[in-house]
Length: 100
Image 1 (cartoon, rainbow, N blue to C red):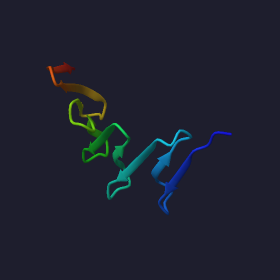
Image 2 (cartoon, rainbow, N blue to C red; image 1 turned 45 degrees about the vertical axis):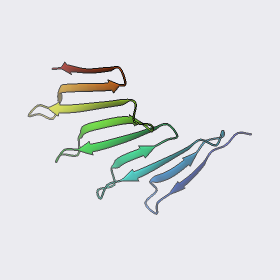
Image 3 (cartoon, rainbow, N blue to C red; image 1 turned 30 degrees about the vertical axis):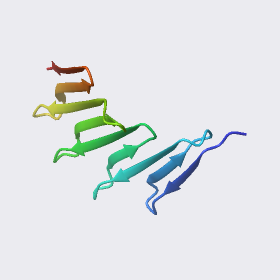
């Protein structure tokens, strides 16, 4: 049988996850217990939050630094998603897409 292993904090937050193939992911949390970083074999995902604990920015970066994507979210006065900026970078291209 295939299985996975995980390591957790006393509060039950997963800090390390190893799948059946041996691939490992590590997770870090901020002082409020929100996921702030997840590292895999090839990519790192970093997350920041606004004062209302909504995701403000998520950055996905390849381990070798050759690829990078940053998504920045904005919210209206009712807390609904109102703006999304997606910036991507590869060795040969950069782009910015804005959705409102």
